[in-house]
Image 1 (tube, rainbow, N blue to C red):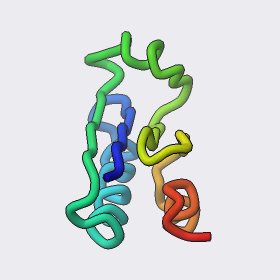
Image 2 (image 1 turned 60 degrees about the vertical axis):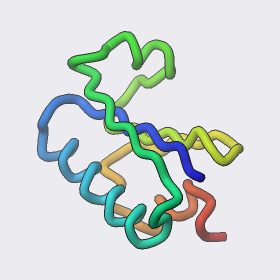
Image 3 (image 1 turned 30 degrees about the vertical axis):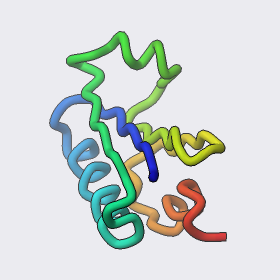
Image 4 (image 1 turned 90 degrees about the vertical axis):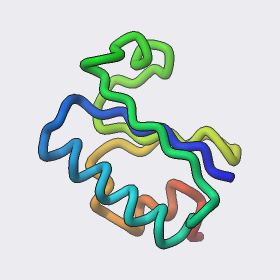
Length: 88
């Protein structure tokens, strides 16, 4: 089971793109095996500090270990797959 947290900043085009890109990857490669939490840092700035998020959008893969961080709109599918350990 994959535990993912996506930190975004409001309803910007970049935030929307990162959500859309991540959902496409999850639906294709992790169907039924992921939990995704989208956190808007404008609404919950305290969570940015707790997770040490300094840029947005940022994806954090909490489980399975090892923990991974990906920064950006997640448009490069190959990088996302590598970051989630779904591709060597």
